[in-house]
Image (cartoon, rainbow, N blue to C red):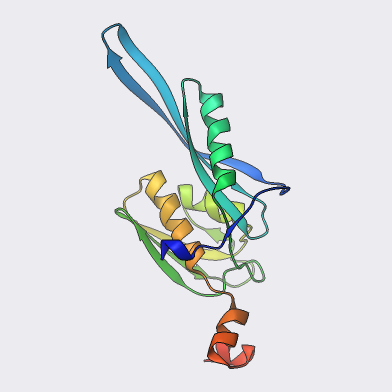
Length: 171
């Protein structure tokens, strides 16, 4: 389902950045140790648009900047209705599995670590989520993106099934 993500261009969007993880990498060479950094960054406009990126560089700030630029190239549109998602969704990336469920108003963002960063960047205010399997931030972020990308707009579902919007929710 990776090809069905609702990709968009990030031209003139006001995006907020959140650094999810910074990893120091050491390469041992003949002349000693060479340090470099990788940064996993999530960007979003808080209104249904979110992206993630990975930046690598010799300096932390440069890695974060590269991550932000990469994230702006990988933006997707997520259907957010009344501060939550339209339906439950499960996704897997590597050994990381994520489950996201819509929640009633006032619940808040029930999510941990890297998953919370993605959900807050997309603009969800009420959601129930569970990260299963691996806690590797890279795979958890990718799995969360896959789950958010697989969400369908209720209006589109109603059109595809040739039924009213009320029947989509009432079954």
